[in-house]
Image 1: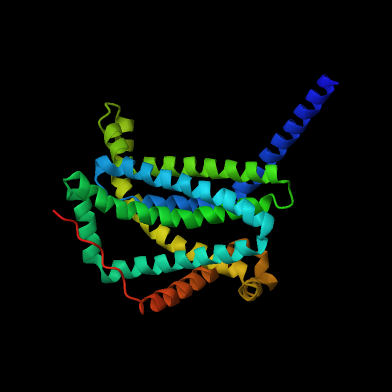
Image 2: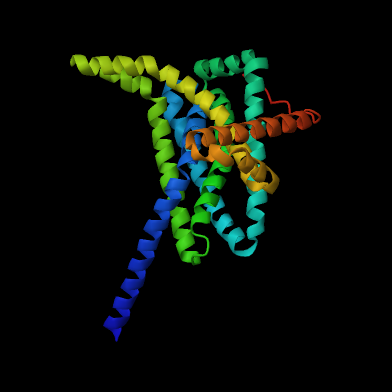
Length: 306
């Protein structure tokens, strides 16, 4: 009897792990787009600090991301179990925040370029540890806030793939995705921000081919960071606008009409139209929220005592 019970338990565990593997694979495919967004945004957020502080900043943001997941996973499971209707409004609120942040970044680029350059210069030239940590803290906080929204979307999408499954399966799949995503994204971010060092190391090689490859990395790294900055900002509008397009029945219906008929036969065209709609909605929402926010006084940042 004992052996029979043990075999039955092992069979149940095997079945559970098999289900988790299958659902995790599906969830990973569905969240792939958001993972790219997360990578671009976080690589852009942590760029600009002193070279010897890049990895510590990445690690600080990664720890914040793990904390975000530690909060979001149990919260998402609880909401899914008891008040599932609340998930979409919360997700849309996060999308609205991303749109707001996107417009703020665009306006800051065009209207306050001097302030942005000053912040970067301060990050590069800060000498005292308290001064450096205070400047870095702003970047870390911004990156963690953005990560919170994207993490919430990743978790909700993952949760959607296991809807109807038992709580244990849901918890295992969502937790696995959360851990793998965080490790993968921030490992890649760490590599990206250190590309210049990798390129320099390869450039110093005696092998001619390796030397050429290192030189290409050295020349391409700044362009990649610049590209990620642009992609990261556009991503805010695409993700935020996409949440509203899929979350509001009216917008979802209009988006469906835009790609109906003969156009539906051409996936590239329909994809471009859907992307354009999400981008337009994201820009509009961001513009409105920034306009509303302009009526409220902004907090004046405290000056550091030198």
